[in-house]
Amino acid sequence: MRGLMTKALATAALLALTVGAQAKETVVWWDFLSGGDGVRMKSLLDQFNKENPDIDIQATTLEWGVPFYTKVQTSAAIGQGPDVMTYHLSRLPLGASTGTLREITPDELKAAGLSADNYGPANWKAAQVDGKQYAIPFDIHSVILYYNKDLLKKAGLLGDDGLPKGLDGAANFEAALAKLTTGPDQVGMSIPTADNGTTWRVFYTLLGQQGGEFITGDKVLDGDNADKATKALAEMAKWTKEGWVPKQTEYPASIAMFTSGKAAMHINGVWEVPTMADLAKSGKLGFEWGAVQIPVIFDQPATWADSHSFAIPDRKGNELSPEKLKAVLTVIKWMNEHSLFWATAGHIPAYLPVTNSEDFKKMEPNATYSSLAKTAVFDPSSKIAGVASPIYDAASNYFMPAFNGDGEPADAVSAAKDELQGLLQ
Image (cartoon, rainbow, N blue to C red; front, side, top):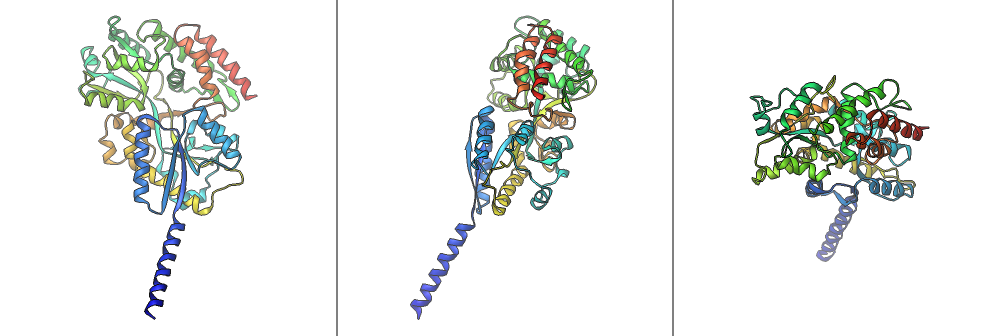
């Protein structure tokens, strides 16, 4: 009798283990994150797996840009690929138009406890195409103005609060650049002028500060938007023409100019904040630095922005089961709730309970430039826009040469307009 009971108990235990093993949901994850972003995401993934024994994330990192998005599109078309992936919001329109992305319905969002109320209106809208939700924002990343406090103080351009002063308005900004440019060994500002991505981001910021729109309906730079685009590009070209910003500067060189003290200011993405912080911590920077939202050079505050987000591929013939979808949405929500750590990469968390927290408000310089989230201008909602898109190609072929003095801004705008309009026909 005892033997039978022992055998029964052993069988029950084995069944319990089997059921438990079957209940564990595996989530296949793809991302394109490298450098500091990659390190931080790996840490978050490890933490999630430790805290959630019923879900196992199996993560793979692929090459950023066109290779990533091409692989996602081709794999989804044949029912392969991940259960969830990182995705730039600027690429959503193209992803939706090719049938690569799965809609996340209002009922699914509600069941997962994900709500528009917890995100900035512009950021949440950028996660939609034609009113349908295709992604959940994770952050806002933008270009910001890095500055050398020592050099700005010497030039009388630093307030008692340690923030730049006298930079708003084109005339004031130009005067500041001129004052900070004292010779070949010190220029007013460094920008990656040989980088198409940065060229587009600065241009789009200045277009947005005039209330301009790059694409309206199915028209590129329609009406007076072409004039506003020309004005934006002409302002950028003036910076290089006057020698305030060096021409044809590669991305790493522009950073080196700032960190070596040869440029008083620097425009780049928030993702370089860890670079500055690490150099300062190691004592290799040699000066006190800060970072703020891009000054209002024209009519209104506006800054180019994009977001890393989470999206679900529309795998043909291999759709997510209800159980898998629940696990995926659990992962997405958990990542948003733990995005304070992600902010250490320089990003602004998209999840408002985190950005409104006391811990984030103490995080500098993020808290200082987080004001840009309220006036952020996201890339046009178009299949020709976004990271590694035709718009970026146009920035490389037309805007970047004009930025560096090789051609007239008006001609560059006209050529880019004609080429991109042809792609929308």
